[in-house]
Length: 77
View 1 (cartoon, rainbow, N blue to C red):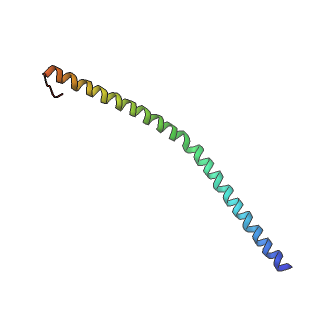
View 2: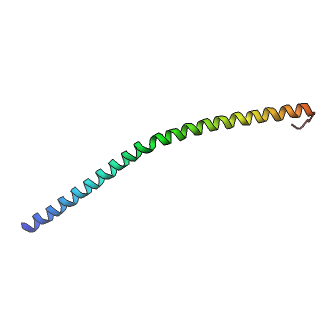
View 3: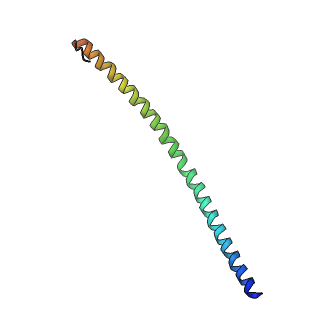
């Protein structure tokens, strides 16, 4: 009976240790998410603005190239 109690006691300790470890991991995960999320959001917004500016710049470049071709009489442009 004593041997069985020792075995149950060891299993209980293992369960408690694993529960604490999982709790620490979850808490760390939440803390890291909360820490990095504003930075990720800011970078996503910056990327959207940069992509918009790049598109606008590309369109302006196409318009200018077309205009130069018209002014110089280049039929290929």
